[in-house]
Image (tube, rainbow, N blue to C red; front, top):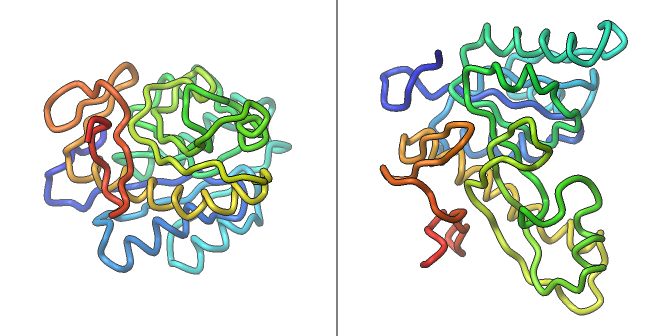
Length: 230
């Protein structure tokens, strides 16, 4: 089982990413400037050569990138990737733009919590095209969520959210561009709370400051996560 927060060894974070790695870079930058007291022990990907792997290598972080064609099926690849994770003994795994749906049995057997970032105010709009769907529904606000990754697609308990207004004449591209830096701040703030021990994660529930979290924490203008009632 992974080390619990509060021990002498730095909090061990692993990240899975499939694309450009902007959320990964936000974590690296926060680690480097002292805002995030973690050791990023591995960056894994399903896309060899993706920008996220390059960012990790430039930062001196161990990497692994697996090619689906090298495995008999999806589950076999996922098991191999999680074996690499297990060897690095993470306290937390972050899915930061990881575009594969992980095999249910593999994710169920993980001995460490897994958090995913999703560009909507869950439970609204699981899956793809979230910005366009929010516009089509006439929503007045949009945002991003950090939630526990489970066998349900974007369906695990939500730890935290950030909200932005939907502006007149917004396009999906404009919304995505405006939301992205707030996603980065949300991810850093959420990982910081878990690393501090203030947040404890299990597949079925989230504890914050010793009590069960009743509603997702909200990112304020100071990039701090606060209870929704504040």
